[in-house]
Length: 240
Image 1: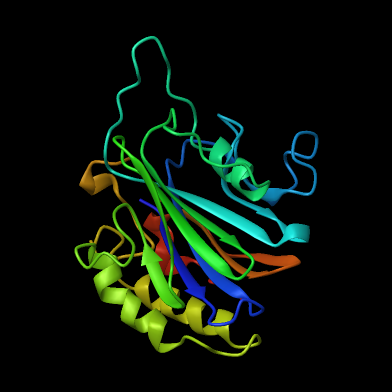
Image 2: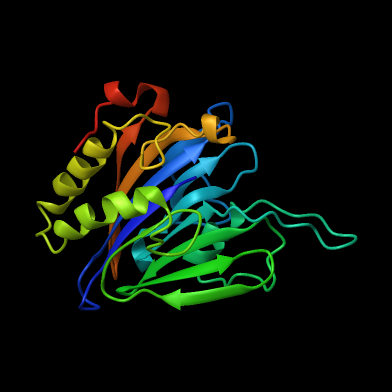
């Protein structure tokens, strides 16, 4: 299951900082951040799932929008006579200002939306969809609730990310990547790991990508800091 860490600023004119870590089946093809949807969504960049064509993470730099979608654990049965679609369309809609359908015809998810100095998390658990604005500060999200103390990686690493909050622009990425690198020293199947191999937990997914983003009102500075798989985590180069 994916992980997102976000620092919500105390001032709306200050940047929002994001570290997004993607877990996916290594056999499912994907493309790194790029303008893959230029015909339908001009100006939008993101990480594309080649199979369904949607995005795990999407950004509209000129409008200062970013969205990341994380799978939740609740299964969703399709309504009678309907089919469930890909969750990958949701981040693309979000960064172009389109609201989430009620109810979404997808499996369950957590959607992180950053815009205009604020961060909102929309939760679809298969029964209802609810959204909340995150208070200023550092938050961490995986497959359950925001800052969920029952999620081992959040319980272990959220204090470390909070300890390096509020750093100046030239320093925050290094500090956050250092925390991520320390977390990668854990075995990849450890419940506390952020860089993960979920196969021993019954899921065919591994950590394939991690991105940092600094989101301002008129720009998104997006970068890749990790690209590989969890089985080789100790050999990954975590790039600044």
